[in-house]
Length: 347
Image 1 (cartoon, rainbow, N blue to C red):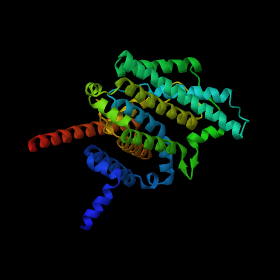
Image 2 (image 1 turned 180 degrees about the vertical axis):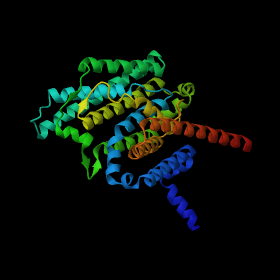
Image 3 (image 1 turned 135 degrees about the vertical axis):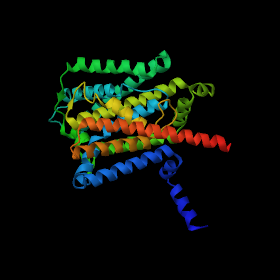
Image 4 (image 1 turned 120 degrees about the vertical axis):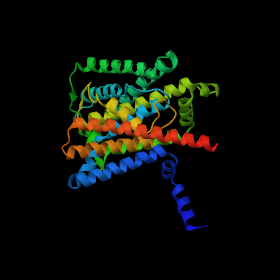
């Protein structure tokens, strides 16, 4: 066998390389990410290509990345989840109240560990309950996902405002703040959490029957129903997972800022939708990957950090983000149509 064939087989043995080779949209996004990284490295080499900058970026994007994966899951089902920021804030506020009321600053050791474990479990439970509500409204009541989650977003935000009366809650144990500001072997803790979630949901979508059923339902919900799939439970599970991701993002957010408030991250929802669509997820459902979302998050983070270092206005940043999304969507549409046309001609 020629050496070239051995090399190709070796590369194809890596699922990541194989996935990129099979997905033209993902390949183009990878090129864009590399282009943005190289461009910012050339324009601001003294500040962009530093460990301090990479570490700063690794602290900044994880909660945003978790919210993006949450919205991606909802989009794969053919819906959308506009309530992720509301879930994140409500979960964070409940966690903050427990920490300030029940987890005393002077406790340590096993008592502190159990107290913080309770905080995390309660916050995640809030995310599960919120996801159950969204899933029930959409799959059982039959409310359109965009309206159901828009209403629940206002509900969760309203509950958070009533609980806090509009004020911020602050003053958390140092051990909890490590979740947002600490590191392990110089790797930022928020990045580790994001990485573990990204791996977990990538496996969930690609290696389990749930992932197969979700993609099938998102592609054609009527066909999946007649194939014997329980669309209601698939939808509910999807929004529960979305709620868990949102709650986890809320925990990282309050740990990083050492405060919890009802209106944190108000711009994250639209930005997360931008990331998901830019990452190649089909808004109509049935197509998208966690890797695409990760590349999209990284490309926008490179762009944002580079613009800050070049002292470019935030207004220009929003303009470029929107222009980039339109260019990617238009190019994906063009190349996909061209590919379909060639397939028909060859048939």
